[in-house]
Image 1 (cartoon, rainbow, N blue to C red):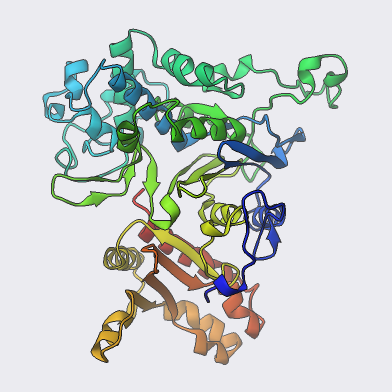
Image 2 (cartoon, rainbow, N blue to C red):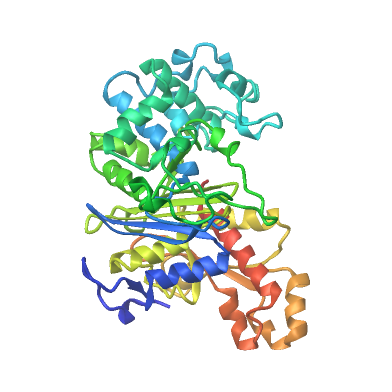
Length: 504
């Protein structure tokens, strides 16, 4: 359903920040309930302003510390972008060349890495295995010990494919140290954190230096602000707990130098992102494009990703997202020349994909950023790939799960067969009888909604969308929206769509 004709046109500065009649607050409240998230911080940019930063729930559910503007969260995959910026800063200062072999700066690396360039590592196109996936990985390794965990052969030749690997950014962080003769930590701190005046950003080892309340058995109540001014609106360090109530230790995940090692508030991430969008951190536009992509492999294949970022067509959308034990993080930026909007979301629950929520939040700040479809009825995600490649990736995801495909309808080809025009539109029909039968045993008429379908199409602006009717919406007329199978069905469809749409 196209919603253009039903939408009230929003202008910059409109005080009505809602999307399809749902306020930003309500969308977040509903999402947190659905995903059972304890705490979350949101920051929104309408360049050059940060008009909204808000905390929801608790950054530490046990001590009742609130998620706030100052809450520091592990930012996981976003850390890569700080490393990439540092490399580009050294490149602009002519202290290194992006085509340098990584062995030029780290000659003790094995000979099979000789053809890997700095740019290959930044592109995740080195072919090196991920040292953090090794069985012996502990998170305590120094550089030499970590490199011993890397497999002694490449998964592919440099610049022939893409595979995300923490090894790439460990190598880049080491190169930064060898070029500058100061620690990676100090270079990032001097040229990004301190340079931008980021007050709530630091590395895992810095966390004790930030003021936060001592809430223990001796100080059980929030009272310190009455005695110490630094405890008024304090900096808090987010905590996460497993299902048994045990605190999740992020030390191992935070040991991934250059890759997953920074903590920050959502507001600091927004400030940093504004600086990156302009020429504050990387001065030359052509050099920023090397961080933003897309770029082309040696075989001619275009890759819509670099340094953790992923790139789409819809209003110049780019995002970087990830998850570590206990936490999820997301940063998106719409680079449309009419309105640059960024959305940052950080939360203390792992495995959360904020892509759709962030798009709706962005849509609340400008019609240009909406999908132009009914997001309440449909689950939508933009793909980085062509329609044909997206369908191919979707078919592989289904095959991996042993889910049979019953039919594939190429509606654009059907239109051509009757001398009509239609943009690429393909429907994949699939399902598992062992699942659908349970639903039909409750109400046979739900057979009219089965088997399942996911559509892939190219819109008039060139964006490629994957979409399906939300399972709860599909099941509601039959009184089965809360059936456990419907909830599992929704999760499966979301996983399939994400796998088909994203390179990482």
